[in-house]
Length: 320
Image (cartoon, rainbow, N blue to C red; front, top):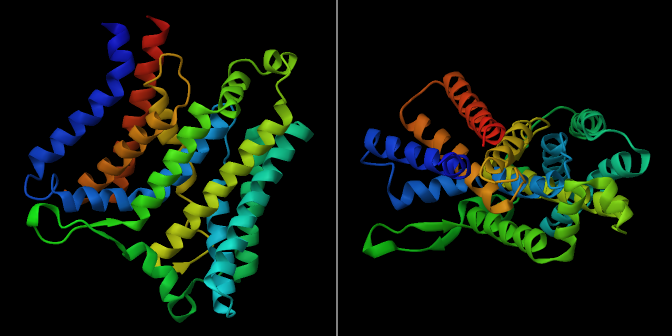
């Protein structure tokens, strides 16, 4: 019984939250339109959390993803404002994400700096660059091409059951594509199995011939790439870019991964479990917003739920 609760407690808690909001907001919460809206709202966080899962399989983490997302959005917006094409802006932003991830990987795997210290430092560096290149201003309006900002507003018309037309947002589709790519990478390839081996025992993996340094470098690069995608999605959604708009992504992404880890018997990060963590955060935010709960109270409630879920899982492992 204890083992069952430990493994499925987070999922049961998620279902309980859904039932609570369904009972509290019966007219709007369980509609297709609202769930598609939730999927769109959490899509940026989902992309960052899915790719954060990659480094966390090794026992590492990346504190710089929020500032990296901001920098990627800013770089793309600046290039748009200077007349460059959408393709050029996207390519530059993604390249910066990969470069930032490689920097993190180099500091952690080659130089040997602890991930907390290294990525805390690059968090500040990337944030400083975002302010430097933008001059601290928000880039919006006519500087953002309609083809870029229109991505966040577009989608595939589902027209469910003859009701009012409902769209599957392109943002949701993008998040699902990233989810599938990360799932295949971690669960179906030798690369993923080696990352889990590193997370289980780094020294044993090295002695077994696993190229620990290059794999950690690659994993951080992929996480930086995901942060850049999240930053571009965020900029598209609000049709603007500023140096701080990705600041909330890092803590929420790590929280989503930790929530998912409570579902694993071994406490390992799994991307399908991270998806559950993202859903929990997305549903909580949507439901509490519909109930007109103050944003500060929402932060307290969400933080308390995360701590309770992780504490319950840890207590179960210590006693089970």
